[in-house]
Image (cartoon, rainbow, N blue to C red; front, side):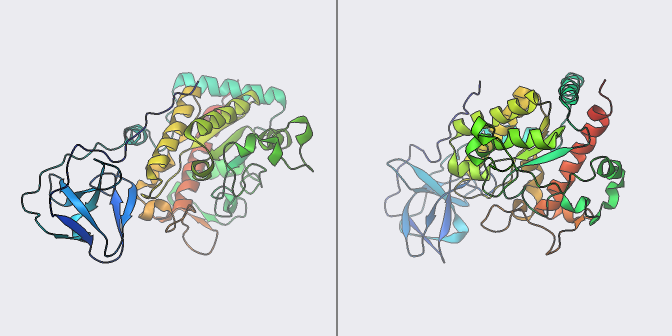
Length: 364
């Protein structure tokens, strides 16, 4: 089954604070990070205004201080330009930076869109054929996930004739093929949901589902909608409510239920801030990649695609994706390079297009 990813020690170094050298926040509170940089090291604490910490040393570039923070021998890092150094700070030793979390290599090595080889394609066709034998609709797909899935900005505009494909006009046949399902309100795409929620009969709608017989929201949606594809993204709520082991188990359960139901699950990684949960976000995203690889199902690496978006495609300080304005129109004329929802809409439509061409209309 799932192999738990190795833990990552946020702050540790065999170094001593330099006698008399301390740093103080120059203005308001400033972030303390797990390493010298904002790109790959998350926030581990805050140096409040008028608070000082003893200095351990500097990074090799000399633009980040290593400070004593946490337990004995533990350190964090703070950018030199946001603090004031005081005391005997001449001749500070160089402290080697910790390596970036190992999950980063895993995530950055995966393409944004799935590269499906011949063997995987054959397996997906077999899943689709199983679904057809069970009565699934080849033109139907559903959405599975949390608030970023249960959003008027996600895909719905395609059915409302409220979109502009811009340079991606070749995707129009896929809009026609799945017409009516972009706006479908899924029982499994709801605010607050996590990977366990969709498998728990407790959350099944008693008026629509056979919860007393143990039917989960996902099983209920599969029975009612008869989709051939399920596009899903989990992570933000899972980090709050589940351990990494629980998330891995639940995600594997979702994939297994999907395959048994003749539904092709499309997993999606999620984007995140460089905040105190940055390390957890990497771990949960890496689990998503791992599950997709173990079961040979398509993966949208939204995490990687969103790295170049302003604020990683998220509104400040929260989990909602950004959009291009108060309207819900889907536009691909550069908006997908600036905002989270347009980018996710584009990647999702591209994967639906790939599966339509290579699996749904090519299966025996």
